[in-house]
Image 1 (tube, helix red, strand yellow):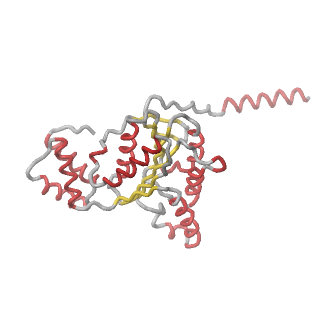
Image 2 (cartoon, rainbow, N blue to C red):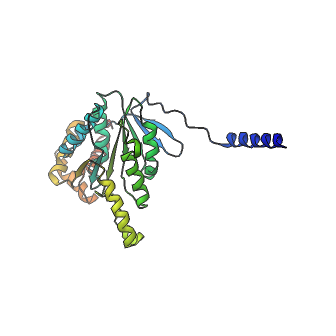
Image 3 (tube, rainbow, N blue to C red):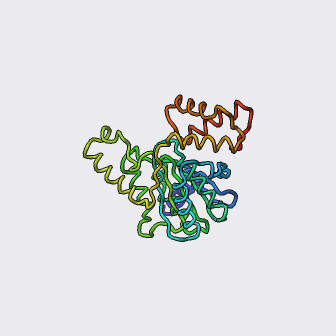
Length: 279
């Protein structure tokens, strides 16, 4: 009877093993510098190098210098800080994060960037542990980070940045962009109630404090907007007499001035003039 039971248990175990999904392959970071992480499958999907040169980001010289220096220190194994790039939309936060990485990575062959979706923040502790101890140095980027679901994701991020009893991985740096300095949705109180929202807010503000480097991106004024337009136009051979007038009309139709709006105008102008853009 015991022999029959043991055989039956082995058959059940074998069947469960066959039904279980295969373990994700060991990540291979040799073929690219940029990757997107899929938390559902554990896969790291290679992406081409980011093509926008850092010098085309106009009006954010101070922000460029601070982030590039922080990433340079990280690439050398020197003390550096997790970075939060925050400010109004369209001011170049995401472009600066990727462009600054490419700037530093050209001189640091072991640098890699892994981008995650903001809905995958809960998987960050496991991702950091997976990257721990590898020879590469990883910048983990989350674009448009916020905690729409309250404190659960905030706790996961805090756990990843603190690293638990093992401490944070020495070879991993977290960079996030957000429209909000404290990462909290504006309608949070309405959805959660005052007491619950206050508790969640405390958790989320405490996560913001884990970023040692806060880099702000203020709204772009007209002078900076036109400077960006002229820089793009000169770089790509799009200079014309009515450039300022048309660029200002474009921003008025969009209801805002930003680096993104300037680039969209340049793309429209290049298409009208029959000229290709490299990015």
